[in-house]
Image 1 (cartoon, rainbow, N blue to C red):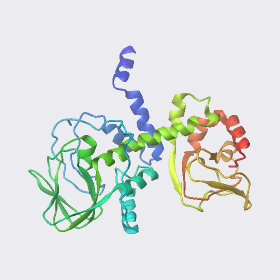
Image 2 (cartoon, rainbow, N blue to C red):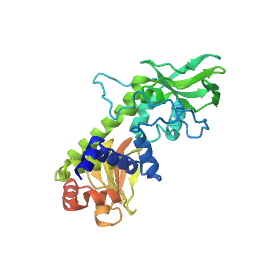
Image 3 (cartoon, rainbow, N blue to C red):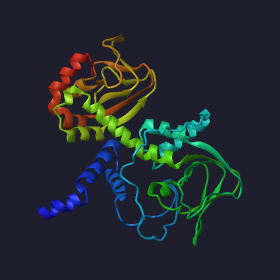
Image 4 (cartoon, one colour):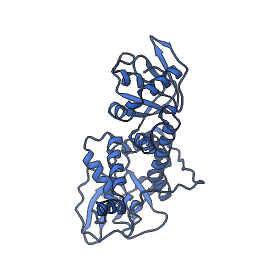
Length: 345
């Protein structure tokens, strides 16, 4: 038994397996095993397919392993205090295009809405002439970019294999070298005039890797700020934070509607909502850190009020199963806190 415990501690198995399961829960994944496998791939010592392409629909031939990566993506990323995310203005069509790509892309679709918004703003439009190399296989530097192709066609080739695919509108490439701190795995050449959106290495790492840490800290902060949860252990608070899912609502949208079944508990991250019953407001406006939706989960009754956004609002949502499992023992404290705040579920 001692050897088993030592082995688990040596490889940090308990923590990373727990994190993998929590990631599947957070995404409400229909295929949780795939999410867990993808999460744990970052810790394997085996070489993975080395394509420098991220799109799910691409049929890229498997390449011969080159041995172990010199450096695997770190599980954490320190965010410099003086870093400010870049903002490059775009028209409505460009914003819509990038949001659509992010909603489908394997790397970006699991990001929270606020992550995607920040990422969308950080992309910069760039142009390349016919015959120009956008990425060269083997290159490695501190200023590599990640790209999303907007127009034109590119040839993607690998030394010794020739062309492996043609990239067109919507294809994203260049991320693996940034994730793994590795040389470029392929050459991407513009076959005609090309326009693309580029994300610099620092912004890529800060937003895709560092931002998730900031969100986790923010989620834990919400949990710690709620007096009714003060009896929970730090481990339980971390578990709740890992189960929270961020959802955005535009101004004027109903988050819950009076009379509906109640399946989720909500904490406001940004924005503001009003609670109405029969069209009449029944409480003060709720803002960052306030919560609602708990009464229907505690009693299994229908929703007692309608909660509507009064401005664009982001909420952290906890599903019924997680709420009952994690917060069920605190039902009295939650009910008392809700009554004190005059919130209705």
